[in-house]
Length: 272
Image (cartoon, rainbow, N blue to C red; front, top):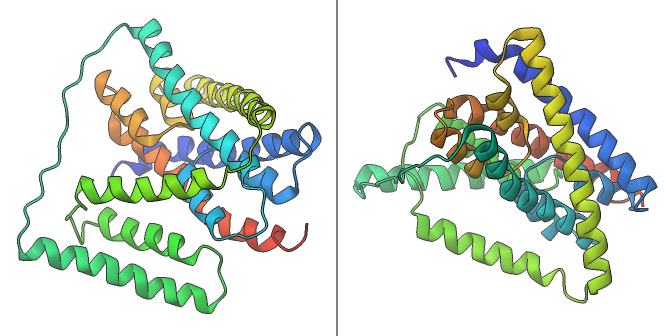
């Protein structure tokens, strides 16, 4: 947090990037792919694949395939392409594992229980106001605040996180039941197109920040490309780029999108 004042212009640029890219890609899905409004907007959001997917699981009678496949294509395409770009520009890099070691004492369990209980209570509060995806939103907001302000430091064991992702992935995969190969290729093709558009917009934003405010291009580009946050941070560490700079901008992008999701669902879910 103590570095944020150094990144005011890049933060503002990230906010602009999220809104402009969402508008452009939504227009593409509406006009070219003939998506419904809500699906077009959710598929166009530049990031937060897991929160978007989780929100979709709560919806009924919605064509999730139109959102999930393009979003998954975006993540896979960027994660596969970006290392190639960095190797071409900066050469090979080596990185050792950065493990996290938990100490399972009384303090650890108290902090984990505190996080879960606080998220549950805030989710009940959000449900009273009929806010969509209240469970997801509560978990993101409360845990984000507690960990950012360092009220808690205990981290959930990787095995529990991996099991959660297995269940989430299985739930999402089952939503693709009945998807024809022709349909799948159609969504993947347009997913690649919109990913190229997003990367181009990130390139323009990075170039603008370099020219106007002196930001280094490659670190800024790595911070703006809407790929997996973990993979982007790993690349930053491998190439001696400030991982805090990179992770902050990705978190800012994800938080913006997570806050937008409930309003998008509330406005468009009943108006199709």
